[in-house]
Image 1 (cartoon, rainbow, N blue to C red):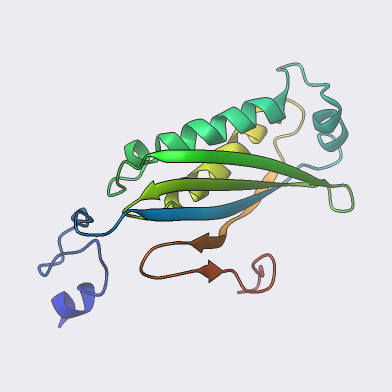
Image 2 (image 1 turned 135 degrees about the vertical axis):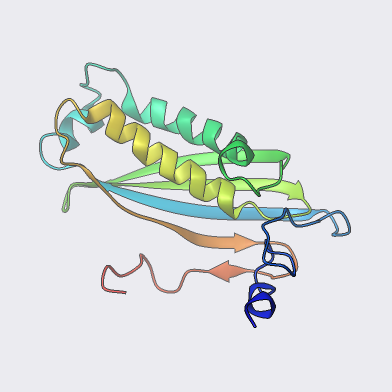
Length: 171
């Protein structure tokens, strides 16, 4: 039966209707998630971005702030996410000159009754989109290659670590 199968999805009720999960009875615990996005910049953008030579200004500073804002506003973007008291957001950039990419890592922490995976993923996505926006005048051929959850900890489901580096394009 379809309704029975849909019950395995926590955001669907017995009739298959979307609803916000009640986390009121769950204990407040330390939650943490790290999400990663990678953007292919290409040779027209890579050196200028890292050298801070963009007409629009410091794209990495803008992307860092955009990630933080996105984390804080995730419930306004993802309909069934809870508002969570975020305690920390860290954004790190790792350029790779061998393949002209920029990897963005967003770490989110909270003391909450539910996890922060969606907040970290949203932050990583918006940071990559901001880099694209800041650099598109140079080359619109940039490609946001991936966005994924690297790890999470806390809560009833325990720890999660993405197995073995970046996801495979062939999977």
